[in-house]
Length: 155
Image 1 (cartoon, one colour):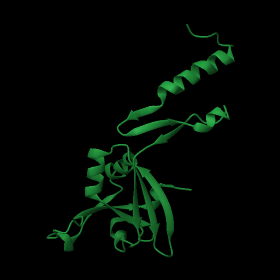
Image 2 (cartoon, helix red, strand yellow):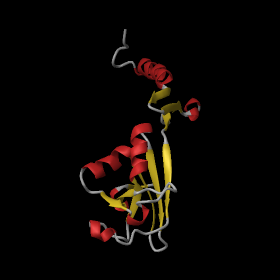
Image 3 (cartoon, helix red, strand yellow):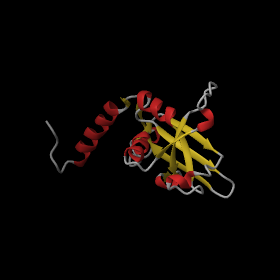
Image 4 (cartoon, helix red, strand yellow):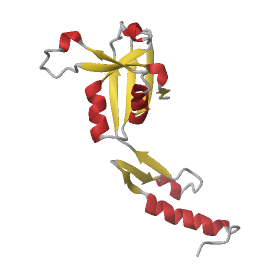
């Protein structure tokens, strides 16, 4: 039986019991952890969420991105094979883009779903590397050209 709507403490107890049950694996490698400071501050947030994450360190400007309608000042590339692998193995991954071109520095992030949306909408353009056609050393043959301004700043 659920508590009366006006019984705040009873509802707090229901919520606290639900928090204990909710903590743990959520889905596909994503976990929820209880906030350890909750015992000393009952009004703090309930959980921390752990999600898969990957860092892309980008130091080379893609100077010909303007042919795809994206400014070379803010453009970057993301290997198609990485997007394909993330889609298969880590559907809830977050990608951090650490971009530093000297005159342009930004730290951005995106969920895989946001990246897939830019691809699906045709905003991101697929670039094929002509000099890598016969490459057998593991270099990506294709990359998605994107604009860092499409994604949120990590602040």
